[in-house]
Image (tube, rainbow, N blue to C red; front, side):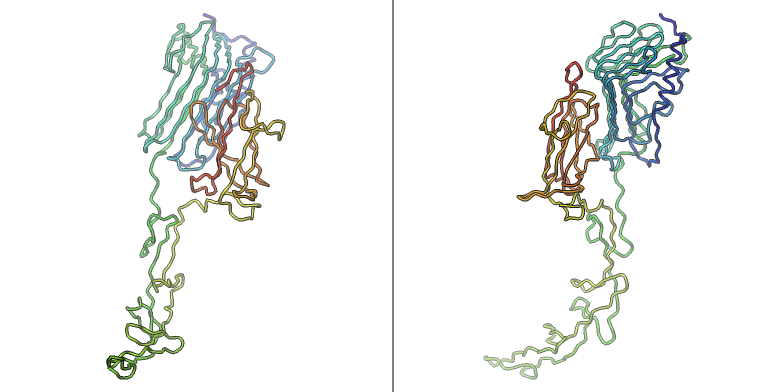
Length: 505
């Protein structure tokens, strides 16, 4: 076996790697529990103790190359990728060489309770990768890992998978297990290889839970048994975590204030009604036959047989003569008297309800998410859009449409454009509308993206990342963001090929 002593040129190269790793930005944020976290990496190298705690990790999403604090505080949408990269880039033999490397993470919906979100991560190399450190040379092709976290029937579910096409370690071809099954291989007393490794931390009932999926994990062990590995190499890693009760049901809505009742307990917003009793003005009394209205009796012309207020009918019987009430009064058919209805004064903060003739206080408990408005017709101050028609297409060289199917080369950016207008015979542009964008991968996984909005004249532009693989991209418009009703949907088909012409899925 080769000696693990570091030569001077190699030390210089690794020192440069340490400086390279420290340039990767970090981020922090105050995040309230419960929350999902995620991280994707094309691969990394850990050299101990030279680069401790920094990793050589040129392509990663939503993470840090520091092995002590590798994760961000929350999961976020991130995509990164390169066509070819050598580290260090020049001046010495590269320690890491990657071709068509990528990593991505996503959280869908981006802004929603954790129980409704799905966190995903993936990372790997679509073509070839080489890692060369003292005592260890690794060549691999098409190594990828992916992981997903979500709630299923109120219980957190973390899953992962990985894929390896070929692997060679120190010129030894490694047999790849079928169907992504994990395997541990001791190549020599000092080299340990783990394929399709899945590391689980915590359980569905613990406060925290994590799943890390690695396509290839190789360790160069020390000469002294039981010591820390001299080096670790990981190719294709994806990780999802949960912190707190992400699948807990929603809290009940705030109750109505004391003394009030909900008009509809299932309504949103919740309207609470408080009945307020106020005395009748002087000279009037509450009439229970009139729903509690305050009345003043102006005419007591009580009916008597053929007496005042009655006349003899054709059959000789006395028939009551209808009372003609003075202006401002109304006839009470129950007593045949004229009454003056006096408005009951309501206390401050309440209003009279004409249907019930009582004073009510309306208390609105707004637990909703706004009006759901999605776009205005003609301008940002125009009427609210209620129906829209969407058109999307691929373009080349700026604005030339090439239709809804397009083939690109990995590492190049693809542009899609379109327009959103109202329905009907005289379409008008819809301004400021949010478009739902979903990437459907070859394995059926759906990833929701955010950020596409219509601008002046209803125009839309979306520049895709340069590290995408083949997929279907769905665009949809919903006039009401609170509803799932879609008035227009367009699907584009993107095929991505490698430099050799192979379709990347």
